[in-house]
Amino acid sequence: MGSSVIDRSMVEQIVRQVALEYLRKGANGSAPVLTVQTSSRHMHVCREDMDVLFGPGSELTFDRPLFQEGNFAAKETVTIVGPRNRLISNLLGIDEIPIRLSGDIAGTPGAIIIGPKGVVELKQGVIRAAIHAHMNPAEAAHFGVSQGERMKLRIGGEAGLTFNNVHVRIDKASRLNVHMDTDEANACGLHLTKDIELFK
Amino acid sequence: MGSSVIDRSMVEQIVRQVALEYLRKGANGSAPVLTVQTSSRHMHVCREDMDVLFGPGSELTFDRPLFQEGNFAAKETVTIVGPRNRLISNLLGIDEIPIRLSGDIAGTPGAIIIGPKGVVELKQGVIRAAIHAHMNPAEAAHFGVSQGERMKLRIGGEAGLTFNNVHVRIDKASRLNVHMDTDEANACGLHLTKDIELFK
Image 1 (cartoon, rainbow over the protein chains, first blue to last red):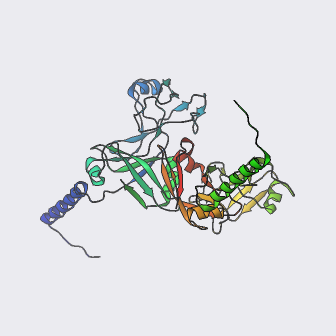
Image 2 (image 1 turned 135 degrees about the vertical axis):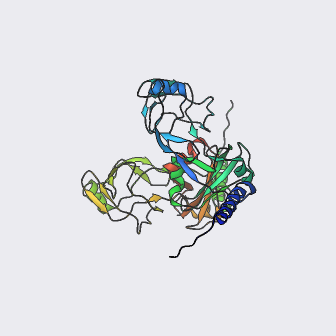
């Protein structure tokens, strides 16, 4: 293998080109890179409930980073008791869990949450997360979609299927990324294919 | 409420009309009634393996009828050991279970099957059943499809999706009926909607 020397101005020029190309891709309509992730069972928890479940002033322990900047999965877990007093890992005993986006919990079923330090009775908040696509405004512009619109996600391969109700969630801090649940990922054989397409 | 008497010839005429209409529906293109069923984990077992697993000359015990004429689910169960020596109900330890139609097992992974009376080592036969539509020739003619072709199945509702690879299985003893697995049924919220459409 040979080696070569390049001077500072050439490095600057290359960096500038790459940076410009990168910015253009986000802004002018070239296809942004799509990633799809699977969300398993999880809970979003507020400060007040943290105090009860894990102790006053307790903090979540970082387990692993999630795709969206600053988001992470925590090591802490809880036990959930559904309306039929079932202690559940797989089965909540709720016949029809409403399909909602995170945070949209008005009128949804409640549950009892048991942590190592205490118990919280949720009056509402149990949902099945609707499949959704996070994206920033430039990515939304690329697809021509606006907040709350629905898109389609086609997964190829032998178990191929098309999700027809992918909710669009736009945030300037987001990176293009689809979240589906484990049933959806298993159904479409997500791990078996790279033939994936998001479209309006 | 009043009542009325109708004579035998009128009854015959009505029966004839209804029967003709029924036959026409099967033959000339009116939409046949579509049902969709979920198949959970199950095993198809031959006589020879029955003898080993459940004893010589043993017979399966009827548990409940299945949609297709004469088919039934049996009360008998077995335990499966996957290649990593895991005793499994949920997880076989097989990374990529091939997606196949029942019976199409050449080159698929094997497993050890444990019954109450003995053990069978399957050299092959572990599959994830591909989503498929059973139908008779008249129903196939209605859709304009032939044996082995793929169709689409659209499930409406909030978790709506379209299965793009529904295998066509034609048999004159069949009644129109789609079989999907539990992951697929959960993913599409099959129990939540009646807005279901099978098309070419």
